[in-house]
Amino acid sequence: MAEGHRKSKKQELLLAGVQELNQHGIVDFSVRRVAEACGLSPAAPYKHFVNKNEFIAAIISYNYSLWYEKLHTILEAYPDDYRRQITEMLVTYTCFLVENPHFRSALMIKDDSLDSRHQGLRSKLSRLPNEAAEKYREQVNMPMDVFIRKKFVLRSLMYGAALMFENGELAYDEDSLEMLRDMVDREFDLP
Image 1 (spheres, helix red, strand yellow):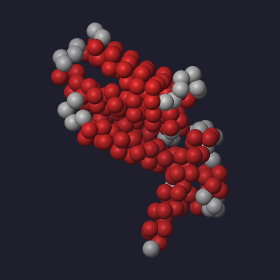
Image 2 (cartoon, one colour; image 1 turned 180 degrees about the horizontal axis):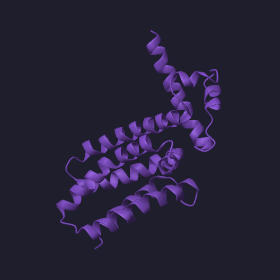
Image 3 (cartoon, helix red, strand yellow; image 1 turned 60 degrees about the horizontal axis):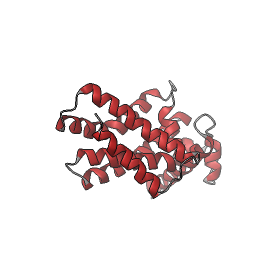
Image 4 (cartoon, one colour; image 1 turned 90 degrees about the vertical axis):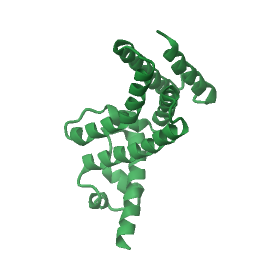
């Protein structure tokens, strides 16, 4: 019974931690505020996480698991259509970044105390999209220099669209997402 209770409190802390990151970012992340949001003592999170950095890494890992589920849904929906997989992953990831703004900043952080676990999570995040991209490159015999350029353009589109949605320059709606999808698809057809 106690183990089940611990898991639910840990889950509650992770969800509150997500909100804390959304509101305050990594630099101003407060374990104390997370505990308060859960109605717990300031020491309670340390029953589940050794320190603040481990807590942040666990939040990043939790978000990774949510993203991983979305990736698998895309892979199952388009099993051998690598171009469509890449397009849908990019649009879905853009949405994920907009809906989880802390996640982008967590991915970009450079902090030596988070680095080893954080780097592992970064590489896990990109493994499936990179595999789909490589399969597509092989399928269409795309030269490596073209592949590298297209990867740069597509990632720029994704991060740029997320930023424009987030700051209100572009409406975050189905029309804009369809425009993004069309731009990604068009990039595949360019030399």
